[in-house]
Length: 221
Length: 293
Ligand SMILES: Nc1ncnc2c1ncn2[C@@H]1O[C@H](COP(=O)(O)OP(=O)(O)OP(=O)(O)O)[C@@H](O)[C@H]1O
Ligand SMILES: [Mg+2]
Image 1: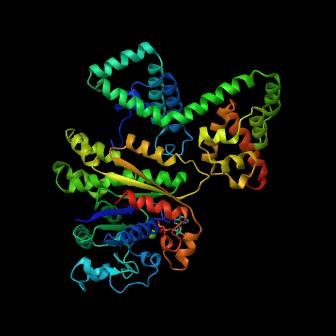
Image 2 (image 1 turned 180 degrees about the horizontal axis):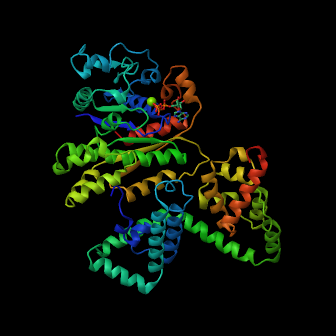
Image 3 (image 1 turned 135 degrees about the vertical axis):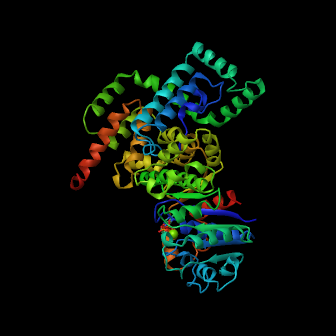
């Protein structure tokens, strides 16, 4: 009992969102929660056993699947109120709602803008061909990522504003300046976030990029 | 009464002494009366970080009664309002400190007539060090952003919990359980949760009491030697995780950026925050000092 049980938290607490969060916000919070408890996550990888982690991830999945379903969510909310786990005076809810809007406003808008821009691009044949050409190989270098990003018309600042990965790191990734990269466990997470924006398979990008790094130092294998 | 901040965090070389000296100097400069105590017995170096020779009086003078109270063992430093209680003449390692001496020091620390008291603790997690950390409920953990250091911090928190529990048992709160907690009942592989499980098996009603004791801790933590190519959300993530999964309250005080000149300043026996007051690392330290005063 030196650690709290995760099941003492309700679904909103698990996702760290207010009770009146929008569908989009729930989705976003779900992704954030998954990455926080991912086996590569720096702050948690050493804290849990495999079973504990699986249990937590299952709770997160339950939270997500309940909250994105309007009927299930209504029933769940009613249960929380009825069992006295939350109070739900209107004023409290509106206040929380406003503050959550303020804090997450800008990145959300950035993301939306980017998503609509990319939708068009992905339907273009030239982009599809480029994607095949660049990402069908086993190895993947920073130049490939950069080329693809540019073809999509995404500025490096846009990647920064969504992921908050510093520009110097983004440049080091794209220019294969391996000596300037952060430790592996950070790099993995960075590559995954980058890949998600370009709608690439995150694991493939990580594997391909790490292979390229390995080849560049044959000595330490 | 003084606000006491023990500074610890398991791993060696993460920057505990540097941060103790820097925060002490900054807060003293703001007009508060501050004393920093070097409790890294056997490996003390706080005087060096302050650019001083090893002082002639210190903790030893208090223990051998050369001075009459702990306050008189404090020497002034080059910074007005900042005092140091050195342990440079204590040749005994902290792990071997006599029980009676430890108790005497802890009781005296609690009575020191200063505004702020910082305890610079050494590396490791020996019992004496943990007891000094437990002098206050607002200990500050220092770690670096490496995964191994974070792992160490979790271990440190659990060890503190376990030690606190033992202290509570010593205070006869769990009278009937004493016998289960003799030193040999605690085998090396025993985890803190095992200990607590044993306690609860004997007396399930105590669970609430235990939890409420653990929830009194307000741990603070600092990520030192931070480089700007790292994930800047790490501090907040760590805070979220700790608040969620441990029973105590955790506050992330901030990052202290890596700066190679820190080592240069230490080598040339000058205080970094004075020599380079306008660097990022100095600004980071000032923010942290402001948060805890
Ligand atoms: N922010 C920083 N940037 C660069 N170097 C740093 C930083 N903080 C500390 N250091 C370096 O780390 C070294 C160790 O720091 P310090 O002696 O404060 O660690 P410690 O945690 O007290 O170690 P110990 O556990 O051995 O007492 C210092 O000599 C200094 O050069
Ligand atoms: Mg030290």
